[in-house]
Image 1 (tube, rainbow, N blue to C red):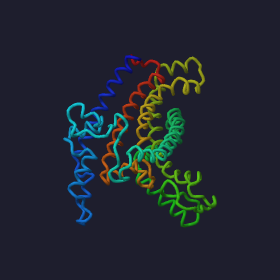
Image 2 (image 1 turned 90 degrees about the vertical axis):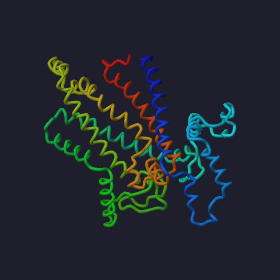
Image 3 (image 1 turned 180 degrees about the vertical axis):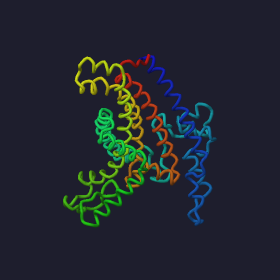
Image 4 (image 1 turned 135 degrees about the vertical axis):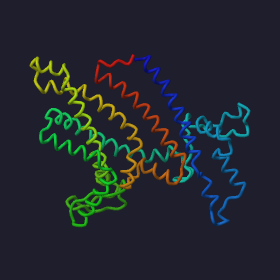
Length: 355
């Protein structure tokens, strides 16, 4: 295990270094930057002078050659005077030392980590709630569908899974919004269709007045995006677990357990389900990066201002420091998820060794 972990940490470092190069080069090649909007001002009085532009370029590190811009982004520029590059020395520490730069457009001159940190709790609430809900429901549904194959409930769950996997999340979200707006108009119980919290108190039939920014208000705004994400994840999780369980139930050791007279519940839950969980572990572990990134489309549809919404906003406004931080943090989480999946395989199936 120790040898495996050392080898994997070395591979993880190499993958992340390549990821930083790819992310930085791609974003550097995209047209547009922090000074473009100022230079394109139609009002001559609003345009900065040549001296102002020079100072802004130096503050943002844009006066350096491209390779030094990458090095500054990665490792800072406080040490450049020690290698004979005094003219490029500055005060940036680089992402390795926790300096991810500042936002260019969305929250100008605010730290990228500060901007992301404010959106992260809302996205974590959304993604953790929807993922846990879908996993808790998917396991019994997947097991039941496999054990009772071709029963009426199995057909129902299978049809539901196909619909859940096939339907685009934006269409499903829009249908929910249309339905809840219709209920609101007719005076029935409804859920808010957008935002994380309300700006003022509102009344819901059957529930009464909901105080803005209260816990009830937060839960009410969370329900619809959780339903969209939870149902889509549930369809995928239950489908994979059903297929895996069907495969495991045909194995010799399961037939042997039944031949020994063990109760069917023990055979299914103790001998079959444990091995059948391996594909589900793979899918579940790779939802970890999604916990950070949020559901890009779902958050956009419901105007839920989490990290997914922030990423779309940053792309639209060409706020590259936020986009690059978002992409790189996702790359880090994907690499960690790979390592966690390998370790969990050994827990679910003792036959797997990592040496």
